[in-house]
Image 1 (spheres, rainbow, N blue to C red):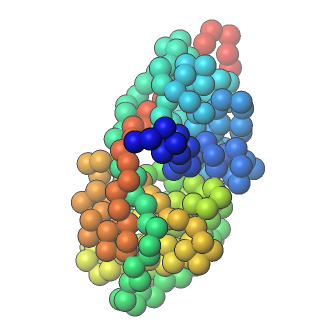
Image 2 (tube, rainbow, N blue to C red; image 1 turned 180 degrees about the vertical axis):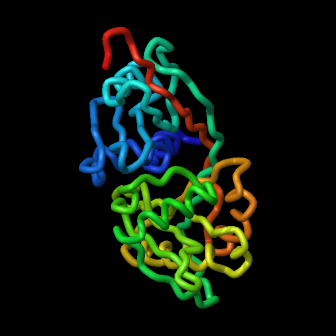
Length: 242
């Protein structure tokens, strides 16, 4: 790889999308420092660092309340007096540069404030990842209802110039195999491509989503782009803090 190509690869926005989103288009949804940023607790537990230095994770500790838990992709070493490392989650990142339309008709509905309780219940039952009371404010969310019950949904989370993440892809037990997830991901992806954005998403290795990734995402034009690690950190309470 040439020096120029290597530099461009390092500058790819998808290498650190949460940091770029929180310092640009989504800054109003979070708290931002010079080396660290995080979404508000009612939006998402996702946080971000500018680099993998201990200075960055130290700064992040000043943006997080004692005992609060955050998840950070690309975090480096941490000061154990400030943080307790709970776990590390392996992720694959998928990107869709050329959307392949989905022919099966799915009758979806827009989701919003009045649907939050049902959305959170569905996420809790299916575990696609965290979903807080205000997460849906980050972008569009659509779902499928059967006899009035919300049984499938997806939407958007990390959004930055030219790129939008597909997130919260989930379907209730007993309603799989009907094309709901693929149809909803197709709808959100189509919207993103209509505004000339590249779609991307993250899949937790070993999760239910990983099993359907090739079947659902690849058929829509997604390809696996990268592997990353997300550290889940709990802010330690230091003496004198309240």
